[in-house]
Image (cartoon, rainbow, N blue to C red; front, side, top):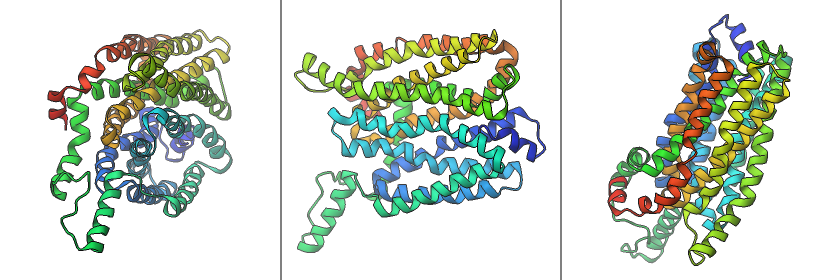
Length: 425
């Protein structure tokens, strides 16, 4: 929401630093780089529900702090810690989906879960732009605070534990107390102490990211797309304000292009993901699903990524009708969904037991680029122009097109490699 309120924030604090203005928005995503490394392993030790509730409270506290910040340094710091807390939801919600849904029905559930994290950045700036102009930039944070308070209440009232390890651990403890038989053990008990489990869990996301080729490469391509999204969010004022002379309100409406494309991509991917998985399972593997059966949808998305970037960049460079670059952003939004959703679902299907950890690994990489790439946006456009700047990103997208095909061919071999599994886990 703060993206379109950035000019008002910078004016209030008497700053004209464009990089700092972009950082006010992207520092929130920098928090997503650090939070998952704690929330994912903690959720696999103590359960999903308590971590959700804890992070809801922390997010509420720092949202209030953002609304009352009296200097830009404090605002940046509070935004960072709000991002650390907010990263919980996108990190362990993949684990919650894996807890609740079998692989045959997981695609639609993942689509519903991903709607917020990817559609929110498209809708938030629209509301933020109008609200900042009508009530001042602080109200963009007060609105988030109000919503966070409601989320806290709903979470404490209705959140229930879903993680099998924790549920069985509690049931075992209850049976030991009721029967007096202290030798009873959970079916998922590995025999390791709590300290050993914590030491293993806390480094698992980084081990998966650094040592698993599947997690590393898939996280990298999703990170690039996420960085593109936040690059667009922070450079819209430059493109549509300076080149098309849009007012701040009108610039806010431009974000709906990405939103509309994201919705279409989400609907398409959610509708086809499970059907395609089950069809391919019946045709090629005696009805047994494989994670690789999520990948064909990604192939389509990777083709659309450079197409959207080229259309957005060159139509804006040549100052064609403003609708042309908006259509380009809509194509990019749809492409992001058709890459991001099957990509994350593929990782969850491949590492179901450690779904939260693999999601954390992907989130760390993704958020790092999402936070840092926008800082280079204005400098890139100054040097290359809008056309060639977006073309550079598009050429990177073209290079990523073969990745789903490579995983289709070699993914199962990598997943089932005992040598790799021993190193990673």
